[in-house]
Amino acid sequence: MQIDPVCGMQVDESTAQYKTEYKGKTYYFCAPGCKKVFESEPEKYLKGGPVGMGGEKKPWWKFW
Image (cartoon, rainbow, N blue to C red):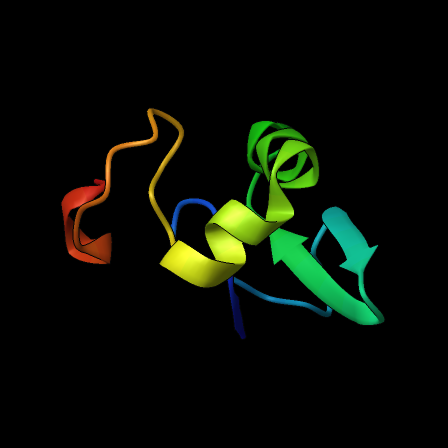
């Protein structure tokens, strides 16, 4: 399992439909929206951790 770098959701890399490569590493996403947001500002999510689609920083368990 991998963690979606945008929303913090767990993603099974063996069945993930949405993924992208950045600086030689593959990142997996739960939905196309998370992938699109990540691709627009990858360093934001890699440095700060998951912040959700609204850009608000909060613990992963509060996204649901």
